[in-house]
Length: 46
Image (cartoon, rainbow, N blue to C red; front, side, top):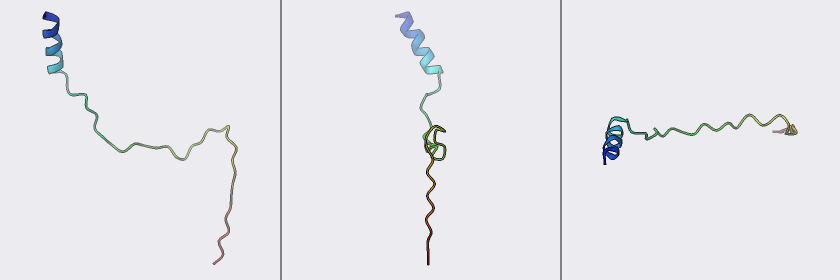
């Protein structure tokens, strides 16, 4: 019973652990160096 009281006090003192939602940072520019690179040039004629 005393252990439950200690845990209740700790929970009351601890700030909430909710994370602030922010946009996920996606790394879309860096591919692993072992992958083959294919450069494709598209010539656009007007």
